[in-house]
Amino acid sequence: MPGEIIQLMTCRIRLILTVAVLILLSIVAINMMLVNAPVVIQIEGDTFKVIEIPYSYTTKDAYILLVIGLVGGMAISHILLCLKVPLFEPTQPTNTEKTAPDPCPNPQNPGQINVILRALEGDEKKTIKIMVENGGDILQNELVNSLDFSKAKVSRILMNLERRGIVTKSKYGLTNRISLADDIRGEMK
Image (cartoon, rainbow, N blue to C red):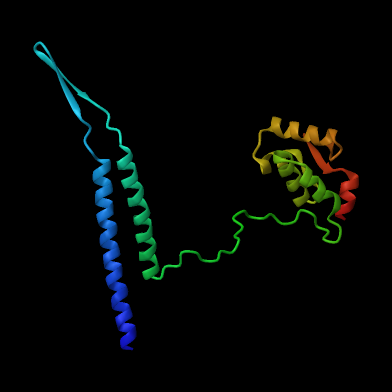
């Protein structure tokens, strides 16, 4: 028991001394960096000009600031160790991205839909994901609303996907019914 008290007291004394050293180093560094730049007063007739000469640090100043930084860093780490703050704690990987549910409803055969989704990028990928979430069929105007893109942009995306044989388009009243191609659709059932 008395040994623990002595150890606690010495740790507190070291902590106080370390904080004092850190404060002293900070004051010295701030004073060095806030040196007033020298000025020259130039008198011409009845007027005068004050010209400020930029201050440049000497090599000695740079070394002093470097030592202050090193000793200050050691002082901060000592303070953290005395306060028993963990410097390195094991981190578990966190996935900040929200993972979308698997777009393929058939877990035994994810096949072609996942391959297509991996091959597509950006807006085309979003379009196919929404179609898969809707069972492989969707009206074009619903797709426009779901994607929050302009009608022209959705038309271009669908035209590219249709040209590559990923989707088919058929007339449906005043809009189009967009469906995944038959070979892709067959996999979803």
